[in-house]
Structure formats: structure tokens, C-alpha cells
Length: 516
Image (cartoon, rainbow, N blue to C red):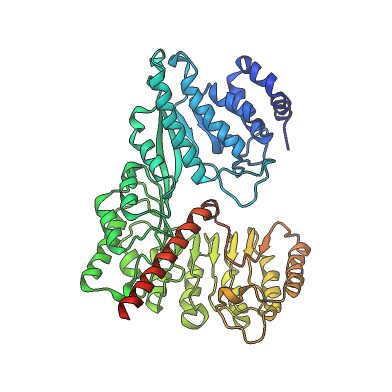
């Protein structure tokens, strides 16, 4: 619902030429209102001029686009390229185009509240993701330094100092540009402050170099993913050389740990890593997917002084002792997000799993149990375990061998969970050919009766509709959930994988030649 003020603001900014000419006579407290109205209407030129003439000390994009009294809709998930580019170029011109620094009040720009989502509702349909925002801000900072060197008649611009908070996303392709921007931060009026850092497709040496440039003392979230070959010894080196006092979230690359080949020295290293993690007194989120941690969860997590709220140990080959530790640890009562995908829960540790679920039920928001061998015979027990989870908002259980009837039974139960918003369910087992084995490999994943699946999916959604729960999104993303960061950089990652494949083939061919 729009207030009369917001409707008036829309009318004002809809005529871009008139709005831009009139900004000088607009009251300062109306700038946030006009910014949101301009963003909604994708008035890039007006957005640019609003930012260029921003009269307030704070420019927080997340708050400006979030729910407000005048307009309840949250626009922070619209990463509209037109609007965001206008914001950033307006920020550059804020520094350049005013003769007197004494009229400038802007001190902090916060870009961290922008949310990357799969579907864009802006008219241009062109999102500017986290990687592109990193690229553009770095480019503008370097351009700004060049402009200031040429503007010797305006030395006052160099006295401006604005802290720009951003979530950086660095890959091989934008590495050099970001490094240059971070190296020259001291002399640039726009001071990049990295609150969250994601590294992908980056050589280990480059990762170690750039992470130090980001000022790790300010980092709250660190994601090292995919094509960064970080192993246990490198992780120990990272923690020994860099202190992360504010780190709340840590995501490690797949296979960082492999305890099946540990030596005595490696055991000491693992203990040291756990102790170093304990020094991160803010750490509440940890992802170690696809590592092999069999029997070592206690050693890694028990030193932590604060309980984890988010834990991803998917495909980590946990054993009975690991699950028992999790169920009885201080973490179990605080877990809001839990991913145990890839573990045969019903056969190997049903009792300890349900104990863990019971302990976390009062706070659990997201539960992911993909490829856990949950079958029809386990549905009643699963419902029993989930029933106390009244705050559950998301449940993902793709890849489990469940029939259509079992799914209907589950969906009737889902209607009882008051806060549930998102469900990712598997293609029913009876839609696949007889004899299909689980987990289903990629080659056979799409080999099912699509017409029958659509019929079942409609029945499941009808169950939600009849219970007045049409707000629950139910889907079957066959190849996993949407990842905005991967989607944005898939061309670069694809090229890297092709290069790696080519190099592997060449090594194999050379080995064959040597043998012959």
C-alpha cells in the first residue's frame, strides 16, 4: 500500500527532466522517499542526481529500499543494473562535482543490504550481481583518482572521506582491478570497506594476498568456494597469519578436510585449526560441505566458545560418534540452519538425528536433507520429528526415494507448519523407470515421466491451496537451488573447467606416451 506522499514522489520523479532541475529546492528529508520512488520506476538519471546531491550523512541502500512507512514493499532484492549503476556513478560524481567540501555531509555508504535473487521484477530484467558491483565500484574508485589528479583546481575534493561498505566477490577475471582499488584505498575519497568476501576461481597465492588487503579485522563473512584449492595445511596457515575478530560466517571449499589420510602431524594440525576457530568469538555459521570428517567433528567444533547457528556438513561422511556429538553439543540448541545432505540418516543414526532435531526444534528455520535415503517407511517418523519445528521456514529433501503417496502425506503435514515458506521436493520414485537406483546420477536425473510428475506436482500444490497455504513455494530444482554468484560467473567458471579438463587430458596423454 502506497501512502499519498509516496504517490506524490512517484509523480515528481516520473518526469526526469523536471525532477533533476528541481532537486535544489527539495527538502533534505525527502531525498530517501524520492530515491525509493525513483528506484521503483527505474529512473536512472534521477537516481544519479539524488546520490550526487545527497544531503545526509548516511546512504544505506538496504534501508532505503526496504519496507518503509510510505511504501511497504521491499525493493532491496531488485538488483536492477540501471538503478545500481546510477547509484555508483552518482557517488563518484558526488566527490567530483561540488566545489566546497564543507557542504558535503555524506560519511557512510552501505551497499551490503542488496539481495541477489533468481527472478528480477525490474523492467530492464538486467541484474547487477555481487561480482559486477565489485567490478564497477573498483573501476570507479580508480577512475576517481585519475580525475582528481587532473582537477588540481579543486583540492577540496581530496578532503572528502566516505566509507563504502560492500560485499566483495573476486575471481581471476576481476582480481587485478580489485587489488589496485584496495591498494590505493588510502588516497581515494571512497574508502572500500569489505564486510563480506567471496573468492572463487582464484589461485591460492592470489587469495592469500587479496584477503590481507581487505582488512580482515572488519570481515564478518568469508566464502572460499569451488576453484580455490584450499586444503587443511593452507587453512592452518591462513588462521595463523590472519586474525578475524568479527568473523561470523565461514564457508570452506569442498574437500578442504580429508581425515581418511591423516598422519599424526595432520591430527595436530586439525586440533590447531579447531583452537584457532575458537578465537573467532563471533563465529556462528560454518560450512564444510564435501569434506571427509569421519570421527573428527568433536575435535573440530568442541573448542568453539560460541554456539553455531548455521551448520553445513553435507556429504561429510559423518559416523555415529559425529552425530552423537552434534546431538549433545552446545550447538544443538541454537541451530537455525542445518544441512545434513548425503548421509543415510534412517539406516545409520536415526535416534541421534531425531535427538538433534528435537534440541534445535525451537529455533530451526531451514533444514536440508537431500539424498538421505528417506523412503516411504520413514515418513511417519520424519513427521513426528518435524512436528515441534514450528519456526521452520524452509525444508529441502531432493533426491530421496519417496513415492507420490508419501509426498502427499508429507504435504498435508506441511500445512500444519505455520511459518513454512519454501519446500524443495524430489521427483516421485514412481515417475522413474522401475529399477532406478538412488542416488540418481546426472545421466538419469531427467529420465522420468514428466507428464506424471506435473500431475503429481499439481496435486501437491492443490493440497497447499485447499489449506490456504498458497504462499508456500513448492518446487523441484533438479540440479540444485539457484546460486546467484554461480549464475553470474558461470561463463568464467565454465572456461576454467574446460581448461582444467584439457590439462588433465594432456597429462594423461603424456603419461601414456611415456609408458609406451
